[in-house]
Length: 363
Image 1 (cartoon, one colour):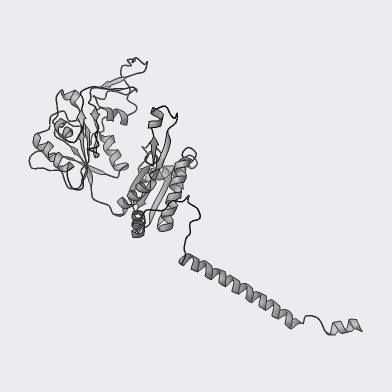
Image 2: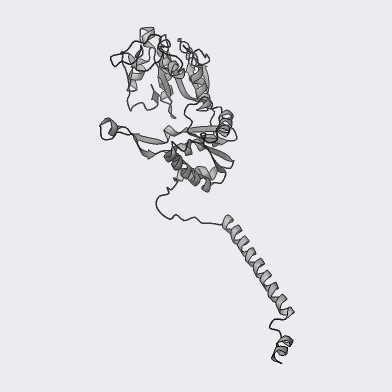
């Protein structure tokens, strides 16, 4: 009898079992809906909190520039992470902060030691195949590019090594934010500026690719690395230095400059925005002053008469250091051992005594 009673009154009827199953399904659907809603709201409305002091805050200037960006900007970290792990990590962490502030800043890493095929594609795309330093960061805004090299990213403590306190060069500070923000600004708000080579005095020709005297490789580096176009300029007559000149290059004049020309150069350096000049003198060839000595002296830069000794296997290249540096296949035609037993090439150039009065003059 008890068994028969249990069969007539089961614990769960079919209707009740279906009700429990339906409740379970509805509970799962509601939970899933809540999770989807939380995920959506989390992406649309969020607040980030820093836990610890290791992360660096972005400067107000950087935040302002990031908030003004409306185009997609590709940032490619082109690094050998095995050899430059520290600089890569610093750069990557900082650029992640940039990307967090504005998702239009998109990051990608290319390790050329692990994926050389991909690396070659990027080098060809940005016309950087000729670079020997393969550790750099590319900022690309729809074809407008800026490159920051690894050797620019940190200050080095040289004094302690020279004083014998350390045997290795240590990095003292990271300059990433300053360089990255400047790169973003330059490609977001480009200015039509270029470099100008002074001509008319026998200077090296930026359009000539001759290894002995032409500056063709140098002008190509201006375009490929600094994204800077160039042109020639003469200051004779009523000609003046254009307003869009971001760098005036005086590439080894063999004849003296007129006083009217040096006056125009001085006025350019005193412009409100500040002019910049790269000077390479060639007095050893011309055998006389070229008219720039007085101008440089007024800016706190003294020009010496002694020669330069380069203890490397470089050619004289008609008395020019730059063409030899740009063409490593040139070697000393006559290996005359110096006192140290190494090959020493003497260049009949001039040396410069630098002054803080002229921070924009490169010698």
